[in-house]
Image 1 (cartoon, rainbow, N blue to C red):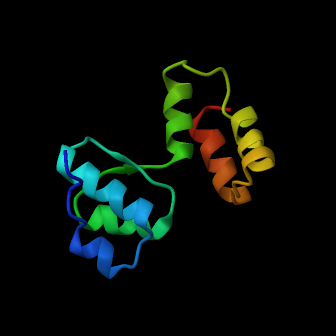
Image 2 (image 1 turned 135 degrees about the vertical axis):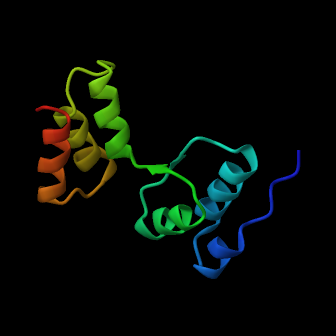
Length: 100
């Protein structure tokens, strides 16, 4: 199956190839949501009518569904092992949403 063409909005926003391809695939597959953490990619996706969720939202949802015992250890690992930066106020918000 050929790759769907990149949306003009993604090209115009100068997104990287991976983000552009993810958006195109999401549109082509009529997916429910797109996993996207980069703010510009999320903005373009939203403009195109795509619901986005980031890794932090996935963790909160996993906690709500009792798929993981706690979010805090996952946040710690994201920061220490993956170099994922989380602003202190965002971390507090995520932990509050996860009831931790």
